[in-house]
Image (cartoon, helix red, strand yellow):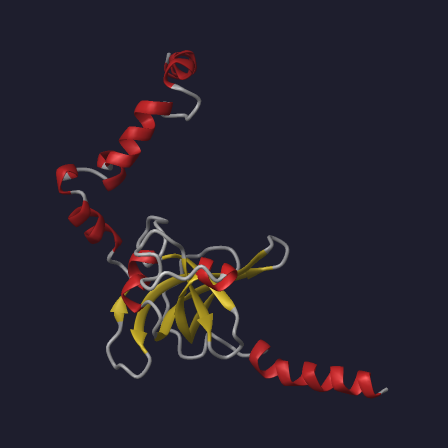
Length: 190
């Protein structure tokens, strides 16, 4: 009986955090994605690999590692896999300047047990806890352009991206190989 009471007590203590309505105060713009909910909360920006393995570079991996949000209210690691731009380019560029800091974020949280989607976050704006001004999470294409000045031109960024061009040159447009896809392309477009 004593163990049952302790278990109930701990479960009851966890309920306020688990039942928190993260949509309160959110100004996130909907994307009309399945299972999206507006979510605004405070968290620490962390290197996900560091949190899981203890391998912790001082600069959160310098932009080459996935970053996460360790939510303050329940200590849950939230995966921000998108910024506020239309392209699904991730959120590392947006979060890296806040590495190791306590922030407040506003965006969309995707939770769906049937899809096995949990704590997937689309960050739209971010600020240090206590700051009045938000930073829009839309810097990715500007940073990409700064890092790829040789790819300047018209059209979508991915048509000019050196990494994308190298992959197409090596593996073709379909990924099955340049030679292998020739018959497929011929049949598709003739």
